[in-house]
Length: 242
Image 1 (tube, helix red, strand yellow):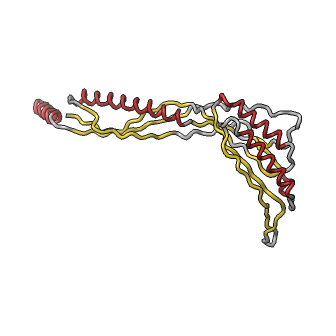
Image 2: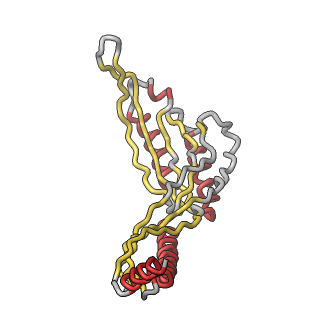
């Protein structure tokens, strides 16, 4: 028994007198509430346009004028970007595989990014678009879904907070190693990285609005409920104990 104790003490002495490196992966997780609202309003051709084989200059101008008015509206507050459009022949293939034109197609879209303070502005845009589409039989407006995302500033601030929290955790672990090994332990090297859980889309209203009563305005779209998401910062740590 005495021999075993002496061997154990000898091993501890050797361990205490030797520098060692300890490798460890650590992580810190926090919750984040996405604050950015994103939507993609779109306008497409109606069935009438899709079956209008011969489109006159006046008819094309009617479509162009509607798109121009809508683009002027969305430029007022700067929450939506885009607005390009096209008017192109619409083709199908018959049973014999022959391509033939049966009408015209068109497409317009914008990407809107805003916080909840601009939700009323976004709804104002939608109402204006709807009012213009009701006057044009060649176009159909689709009310967009809204989903939440993390904006760049919010993400950057959270990264900084998580990096500090991870460093604090790493220093705490160094103290535990020092106490266990009876050595002085310090962080020799740390590599930071991040693994972020994807933010699932959270949808509000989404439906075709081409047949809404022209005397009525659209009901306001409310902000979708925010679901807290996990964000994790990971670090690879090398401790030097001596």
